[in-house]
Amino acid sequence: MAKESSFDVVSSVDMQEVDNAVQQAKKEIVQRYDLKDSGSKLDLDKAKFAITVAAPSDFVAKQVIDVLGSKLIKRGVELSALNWGEVQAASGGTVRRVATIINGIDKDTASKISKEIRNLKLKCKVSIEGDKLRVSSASKDTLQEVIAFLRDSDFGQPLQFVNYR
Image 1 (tube, rainbow, N blue to C red):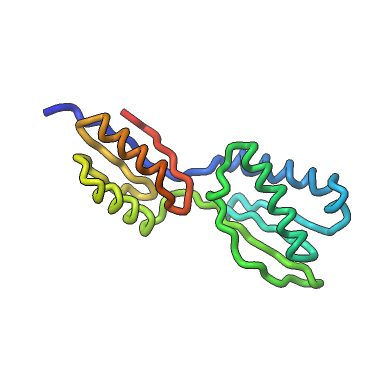
Image 2: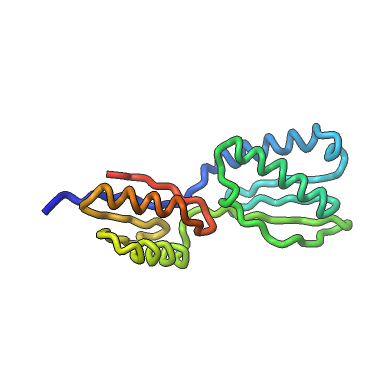
């Protein structure tokens, strides 16, 4: 029997890069003329994988989110890794938005990805291992086809392909 090749599908975010992007965005908010004295705040909670934006209005909050987004992109963090919640009213007439950082593939998404790969009718096996998927096949070309398919598909979060052997 031929040796099986495999790779893992994961969804992970480098929290150090997220922290750096948040710090850069804070500096820009303090220096930018239109946001300087607006009272906007940007906080990162590494333990809960959450970013909180507090601003005096929804419009200013969107501007702060745009600044943060530009910093994240420059740092190589995909914006699809952030799941923004609804606008919440906060004290003093301000608004708050919380973004959760997607880290790992949840069971529903993993089963959806697994089903999509099986629907390709390729000779490969997909197994869900915690918060990642392992795809294995005897043919490396088949694995390349699966990677190309997953790159073209949108599952609501960024996917990385590691441990290709």
